[in-house]
Length: 199
Ligand code: ADP
Image (cartoon, rainbow, N blue to C red; front, side):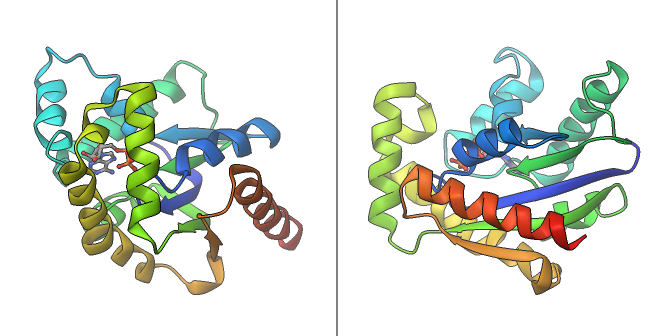
């Protein structure tokens, strides 16, 4: 994996990272949205990595760091090799990685972090309600049981939120994720434009 530029989007499960990430990538030039959850869900369920993913995700747990980085790096390498991502002209909007301090360290030498958007929702009941609703529409196994959703929120709060302290606060924008999707998009776009006009 060669040197790549990236924006990061952080937020608890159900905070709207995927929704706003796809929208931002749609309206900006040169940004490609990449969700590690989507990459994992795209693994063949019969493959070793697919089985490993299911065993962790269905319990609301994070996949171990080393294999996560290995799958991510291989996927990004494939995008570059097949002309689907050009590191010289494009940047990623990474949704779901790095999710631990160790992952942040492992990607530090290859991923140049330009800016970080954090979708904040302090009220867990808002998150749980959103995910149970999504379970009914998308049928994601890790959304169905409230205990699994709670385990994911716990992983976010104990492991992922700590990753933010590794980055300079001047590159972090916090956004109220409890707003409507349009309002969240407006705030993310606003932060992105401010970042872009500054540099
Ligand atoms: P959510 O943000 O709603 O939890 P994601 O689609 O981002 O959903 O992730 C789904 C699952 O995929 C996680 O619970 C975890 O098991 C796995 N996963 C995704 N990204 C990572 C990562 N960077 N490190 C470890 N596990 C990950």
